[in-house]
Image (cartoon, rainbow, N blue to C red; front, top):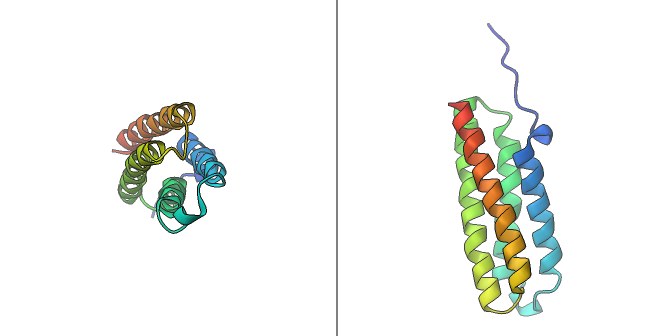
Amino acid sequence: MAFRQRHNYKNLKIWQLGLEIANDISDILQEFPKHEKFDLSNQLSRCSISMPSNIAEGSARTDQSFSYFLDISLGSSFELGTQLLVARHRKYIDEQTLEKLEVKNEEFQKMTMGFQNSLQ
């Protein structure tokens, strides 16, 4: 029986960028109104944390299963993009913050899709 090497998620650039995005979101949530604690703030926090978390969890699986976890991570990144637009509309973040996070999120999506394609 051949031993299959698992991916070390901490060495994956997609995990590192996902963690950076989650930390960026955590930082901006400090400035959100208190009444958003269980609404938009919670959703932003959950989906941003989901991005690197699913990469970490999937890295312990077979490549086929890992691809499924990457799909979940990508879904969370698209959810994050929508929630950032809502936050901007509600004036919880400024245009510059939105653009900075959108650029990082789009880079995460491109890198994750590219990595996912390399597994197949």
